[in-house]
Image 1 (spheres, rainbow, N blue to C red):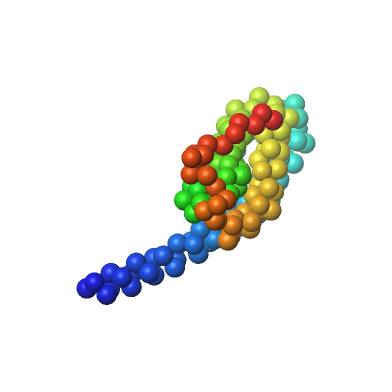
Image 2 (cartoon, one colour):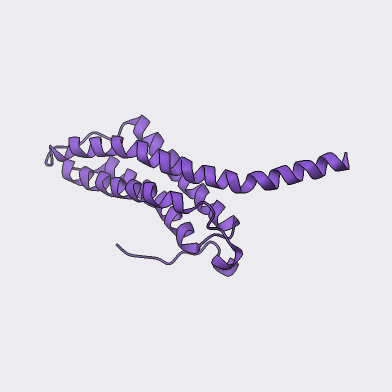
Length: 157
């Protein structure tokens, strides 16, 4: 029984870093897939800048919320692995920005306003596609301060 517990523990330790790398790849793939959908929605509403836009479709809204959750989980995993604080903050910011811009897109009064919010989501998704691959293998105890865990400097845009 003791031997089985040790083997199981070792197997879980071996899988933990791979799971985080898999999550980073998942975030990148989701961002790439959503990028086409959000860009199409943005183009559609940008063509009618003065018109009252329709809310974002429930399917796209749900998928963007899932992306935000995955980005948040990736931020947490980077922190747990002792990864770079900047990457942790980037993905936490993506999760927050997804919620903020999705709300802005759904409450926009004009097509121009909705296109602006969708444009910000598009930009963020492009960043996720480029940055997520950098997560794999970057976690080292020296690259992140545990004292700064959970803290990201505020940046006004």
